Length: 472
Ligand SMILES: [Zn+2]
Image (cartoon, rainbow, N blue to C red; front, side, top):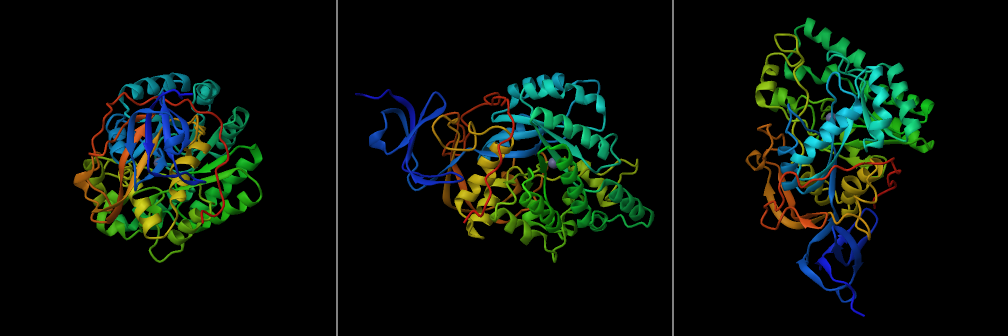
């Protein structure tokens, strides 16, 4: 009996998911994976992609990206990400003053659907204003199931949330089945130390990290975990940067609490010495940590051991003009407005994690599939549609070529930042081709075959626990 034809077969590659390594072909029909198996067991295909010698990963996801007017926008950000090998973004979105969460959900989903070449979802940033919570159930129904709280940034109106408000948000999310993401730093202490530094004239870029000591992250993580335990809400600590914070997270995980965390390339690879080189361009929150401290080694070990579930970019580029005043005063401009936090990271995320994780530190490719595909999909309610190569999943693939050796150069980048802190770093490997819902997105010539607007809004559901345990 002749089997029905399929659209595409990707043959000859080594398929690597978070849990498996298989020499198998992948058959695709109607944008989904319909079969895995050896060629002779698969039906004929309209198109065959020969991935011999390559690694076939699930489509890669960046689950912490800032897109919008002051950053890369919903068109240029996804285009840049697509060139860098990603197929899905979950970005942070903000509602406007006077807008409800359902109104903002519709507005942003509509706008981004016109603009994005990648599939996308978004998390809302929730400011300290209880009335906004009224729209949370409807936004949740529309597919926004994760909400972020800031425990710092006291100089930005309504940004920093009180513990009372955090508890209210978490209670609401527990009832709905959502996830609470938290930027964990003790905002009152950072405010105090920053004001003291300004009063004393310690306002050089290199004076910045000392105003955000590592213990303030650990303290805020502890508070987030305790409020999470009290309310029963899953806690997701964004951009973990310290060994002390990780210790507290591991303790909560060992007690069975739903506490998950991500780290970012900048905390795995860079130190506060970058402030000397890049000045305000390396001002990020939390700050880059001391070069002689325990943090980077602890974060690598925590990711390898499975306590840190994801790696994400926290891409938040700014135009150079917004950062420049920070050379004179790293904290505030002449009008008292905070010098913005944030740096570009989207376009270096995948090559750096392959080079520094897999090549230089010997982590297995299953680690890449875990931290950049399956775990973000599980935690943010996209699994098993995204994050995995299996029958029924979207046919999102990143076909990875291990061979290229190249140097990172800002001229390769499409974002607005105009610099990368990894300028000149040696990289290995490149995305050779990506597929999004069965269509070639990035082709083997490095050209995008899809246009802005190809991407679809992903209505997300409740979290599944991430895969843990040692990756070895
Ligand atoms: Zn962020």
